[in-house]
Length: 127
Ligand SMILES: [Zn+2]
Image (cartoon, rainbow, N blue to C red; front, top):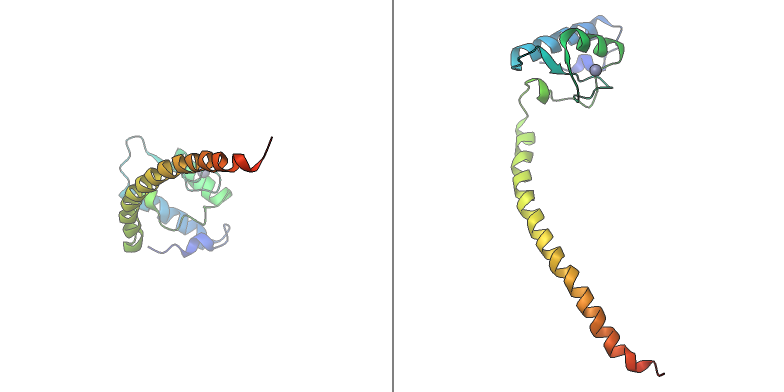
């Protein structure tokens, strides 16, 4: 479904229709027990669950978060490139662990190196 209404004026018919379409979309695609959905408005940023009436108010009075281009919290499938990112994320975890291990090693090394060097330098300062 099109998301172009998100950039339309909030007072426009296009935006209002888009809000209704968005709500319909969420209703069709999100399984919810209590009729509460994440509110994608600029203030809630999908961090707070609200009922349909509140979400409609927020989207019309405050506006939808324009960065919310893929409605992942409302049942929209992520695009192939985005799901590829998820695969990479798994790899990142392995990579992070490797980096962590390396950091632990290199953390120990400079310390050792410092003491070796200061021992070697000591004779250079007489008295
Ligand atoms: Zn809101």
